[in-house]
Amino acid sequence: AVVRFCGDSGDGMQLAGMQLSNTSALMGNDIATFPDFPAEIRAPRGTLAGVSGFQIHFASSDIFTPGDQVDALVA
Image (cartoon, rainbow, N blue to C red; front, side):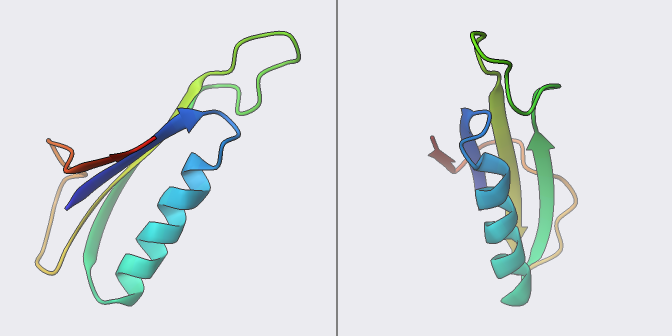
């Protein structure tokens, strides 16, 4: 399965992705991750925040890429 977490910077997308990655690995799955975060993790006051994302591909067999097509999007 390929899951992508997306949201504004500071919404916890990296944390949620890492939690799913850790849990999946503890269950014995193979994982590949692709964190995607803007240059500024927290936007300065009065400016627009960037978009933060985290994609994880996990499976019970060997995998080699973070996934080409998303099975689930968590926004």
